[in-house]
Length: 225
Image (cartoon, rainbow, N blue to C red; front, side, top):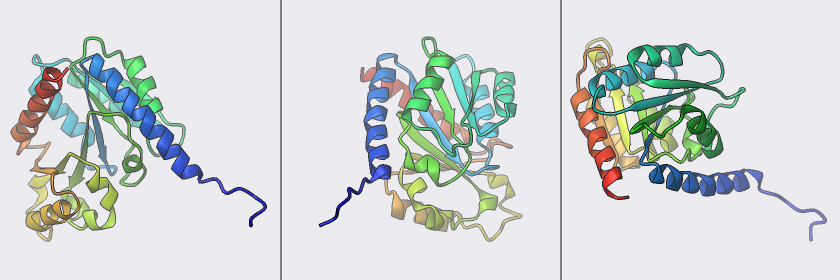
């Protein structure tokens, strides 16, 4: 018999966060705010995709964006210029946001008049996937230059997402070894229900399908009050 107690700290942290995330989802439901947790590796095109999204929904929805980074406010400045309400969240070195940090961000952003809020999570494919932020839906971006093998290397990220946007499809002629068929097969092996959309935030390719999905999800969220 051991003379000391073993405490599973990581498990406790996840359990506490999951409970808080469930509570936060109920809170934003009452406010009629649809929250999207957007994740990806650095450089995949999160901010450029958001700018395209904001432009296409401009006038139809009130949009807010919470930009999470270890440092810098360049993304928040870009989003503000694109026409959405934005705040910058500095994580103090942490590589992800949890439910309580998301709640703090929402409080500072102010959601009373917002239909749709994006949380642009810290750029990496590991930590953000582990923590439920309380978002209505999880979305991730994989860019063509990153390669079609990323679902094999980071399975949890692809497993927790409702939508996977494959960005920078305009570069496919250059990155000819990227297989659209193979990457979709690998994603669906991990997550059969994930919607995979091939887009280019630069040319606008595939953005209509992404926008249609957003409109449908926001409408469905509001109908089931």
